[in-house]
Image 1: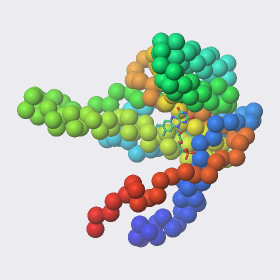
Image 2 (image 1 turned 135 degrees about the vertical axis):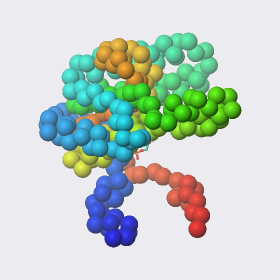
Image 3 (image 1 turned 45 degrees about the horizontal axis):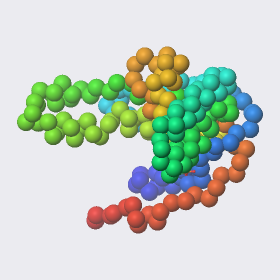
Image 4 (image 1 turned 90 degrees about the vertical axis):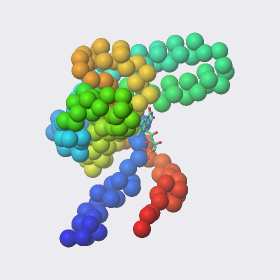
Length: 220
Ligand SMILES: Cc1cc2nc3c(=O)[nH]c(=O)nc-3n(C[C@H](O)[C@H](O)[C@H](O)COP(=O)(O)O)c2cc1C
C-alpha cells in the first residue's frame, strides 16, 4: 500500500487535524472516566524517544485543586508585574496572565511531566570528553524527552477532539512550576505543560496559519 493510499483510508483523521482548534471555554458537563482513560491512553501510545515512555500524566478532575493552582499562577504573574517598571513589559505580562489559567474551569486538566530521559547512548556520549562536546550538545539540544511529551500531548488533544472534547495546551502556567510540582507531589521530572479539556462552550475560530510555502521547502 502506498502512503497516499494509507492516508486515504483514514480521511477522518486528516479532517480532525484540520478542524481542531484550541478551546478555552467549557460547559459544566463532566467527562466520563472511560473517555478520560481513552485520552490518557492515546497520550501513552505516542511515538517517543527509544520507547522509554519518560512521561507522567496527572489527570485532575478536582475543580477545587485546579482553582487553587490557577490562583497560584495568577499570583506569580502579579509578582512579576510588581517587579517590572516598564509599562509595555507589564502589559505583556498581563496578556500572559490572561492566557495562563483556562484550566480553572475545565472538568479535566492533565498536568504533563517529562520524567528524566536517558538514552542508551548517553553513557557513550559522556565518554567523549571535550573533544566530542559538540556532538553531545547537539544530541542534548534535540531534547528528545521533551519532544516525546509533546507528541503525547498532541495525541491526547486529538483523541479528545475525536470524542467531541475540546482542549487547550498551556505553558503559561509553567511560570509557577515549582509550586505546582510541590502541590501535585511531582518527585521526578519536570512539569512542562498543562492541558485543559472540556466540552466546548464556544465555537472555535477559523484556523489562522501562514501559507504552507513559507514553512516548507521541498528538496527533490
Ligand atoms: C507549546 C504550546 C504552548 C501553548 N501555550 C498556551 C498558553 O499558555 N495559553 C493559551 O491560551 N494557549 C496556548 N497554546 C495554544 C496556542 O495558542 C494555539 O495552539 C495557537 O494559537 C494556534 O491555535 P489553534 O490551536 O486554535 O490552532 C499553546 C500551544 C502550544 C503548542
